[in-house]
Length: 113
Image (tube, rainbow, N blue to C red; front, side):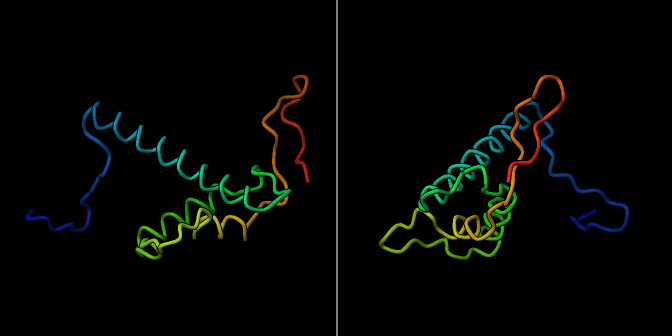
């Protein structure tokens, strides 16, 4: 085959061993924690912003784009805790959110504005 990916060929990036699966799981958990920390750092810079309004999807896409394009990866002499990801999160705050609390067996509570 010589590395040519022709029609009908399938390329998988899934780990082939239990150790690889475990490593990928930890990588996903670390990525989740890093993004949630960036989201909280961003919302903490603006008084009165509830961290629950930060969009994980916005943070994930901003991080992905920053990695793919290698944009803004070289830090200046002054470290900006909000950074590119945080600025996008702050620019795209959610207007309402679901509380993950069940109410008397009737499912989740309503969206809170």
